[in-house]
Length: 343
Image (cartoon, rainbow, N blue to C red):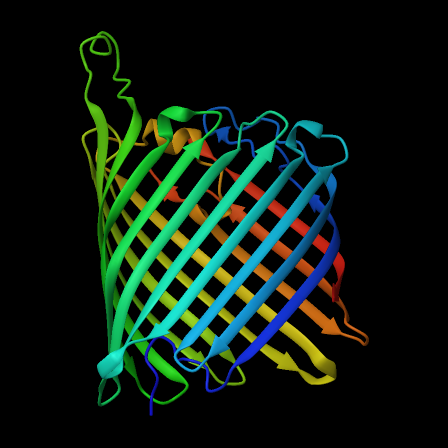
């Protein structure tokens, strides 16, 4: 039987895992400086750093029930750019329960907090999702549900927000290892602070900023010896804040395989193009270099497992600002070599 979006465990089981990793890294733009295109001589300082991370996971399963919890804490210790030193913590809880008549329910919670000396990129993020799905037969599976997100920025609280919405997805299995998926989401996002319009309207404008993002994604996945996941997302964000309505196109691809001698190679790339209704927004200007996930990127990694739980890994990544109309240009390259130990 072809599975849809998950399956319950066939037998009662419990599994606890842990991992410690340490990397030496160089970042060509440690402060994530965005340079004005009209002043191309802007300085983006590079720096070396140590990256330390501790991961732990617990999996509990029995027929019709699976509970996964992953927790991680990491440190980035820059040598010279001490203001960029930070600590990040994340916890993911994923509960999957079988329901009568072939249905299943899934509850997912992701909480992340990032602290920094200057708080310029410090935030708290909580994402929650509840979905119900079912295999329909003939290779089709469907799921639908609701989402809720909370975001708080310590440095720029005017961009803190609460959002909620719904989602619907249909998956079609070509084989047991390949499938296409078409998904869509619709949400409403409200911001905590009042709109800061261009003077002199600022004093008179007391509206609460609200956005209405609509997104559609089509993707393909193959889990053979060469793992592949690729897709395209179209996002339309309507906002009552001037300059923050836009249409975004994002292409992404990820591939990985295991070579002889237990060598694992992975690579991924993303291309993002955004058309702003009124030009580059203030929000995008402030957060242009904030999150790697929102940028164009090319990443590659090669790792090898040796023995007794030890692995070595080398990584390379390039990040650049999205292709959009605006004066700011952002580029950043990181390279790292490290070791991991599975507890």
